[in-house]
View (cartoon, one colour):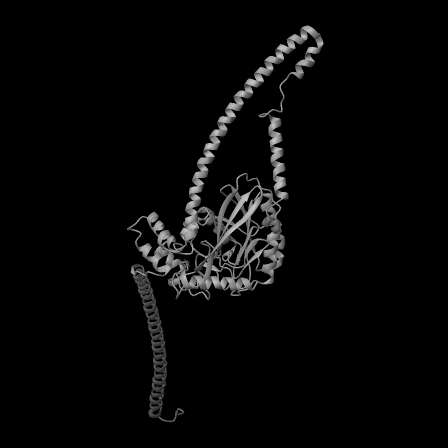
Length: 552
């Protein structure tokens, strides 16, 4: 309202001031209300944010609590499962089953504290008609023969020393007598013929080529070399068939028995259920558990050979692949404590955790006395004076391109003086029961180059056996102590044994033995304890091997 200056009393001016003050108060109240509303709105938004945050924290706490409960339940379940498994194992050990090899082995194992191990072994050989009974008896006979031969050899060595001593004494007397005669003859010659005495003296000197002199040693070495050449030129019939061109120097024929069995994966994949893994069984039962049902077989032979498929390492550098296996380095005792002397390491799981894991595996195997071989590395093992040469070929990546490696390794063994050669291959296709053309070509080539035994693995199942030029080719020995699967598709396996006699005439391939087995002592799942079969299962696996061999 405009100010009216005509009002002499100033009443209108006073009203205007009051009106202005009221308007200011109204505006101030409006602003205060707006501010209060905005403040209340912000407070409301803050409260809502706090409520949302609280709900989220509560939800997170519930999830963590549920996760802890699940973990605790899982751990409890694993403990209960392990307890049930142990209880079932104890029950099986306590049960008396008059038939079935597994039952007898378990019962005998339960009585270990009551009887000495040697007595159990003798009782087993006497009462248990198992597939390897003959092997144990032959091992005992072989040990007896070995002791007799040792005594005979010791006696012969003593006699030889005595003969050498007597011969040496007579030789010294002979030389002294010749020198005395030479001196006498020289004196006489000087007095009678003057300058001719020197010539006669030279004529009277003893001959250098008598037995015991350096000339005689040279002649003996030459004779031995000639005999070796003759032996190489006229090998034994089966050696001639195999195309071997090696010389032998065995004056006394020596017989050894070799044992071979298939793939061993001592460890697990980090993505597998740990509670049912081989690692857990090792923690529960120790190294002796795994091969206890076949240990007697391996102890009775002269050399046990297998394939080690996996790594023994602490490396975390896992390769980018579907399955990668590794085990604790101490798992090597599973093999060494059961009389396994050597193993092939050329396969598709040897580098699962990088090159370092392969180096670690070789080191850890050697640390327990196992001789590894494979790829470009061959091995020589002395067995009762016989030099056994071993090579391992990984065929899966480049197949027939491995031929130059096979030829080179075979030449290394020959140059190193191997008396007996075993060629091991990692080849074939998984779960295929017939060898492919690559397997057959390389197997035949190995025999043509001089191998005395050829065997392979990788297919996770048995394949047939072929006799080529008198040499056994075992295309697949299947899995054995296999930590790569708790429920293998095919649980059949076998142990193969063959005797070889080495003499100066070459190698004679003798008796072969097949021991059908299962990779587990339990039929429902893999407990990683290979067990020989008997009865109907023995017959079934033997028939299976015969049928697969007929397909080759």
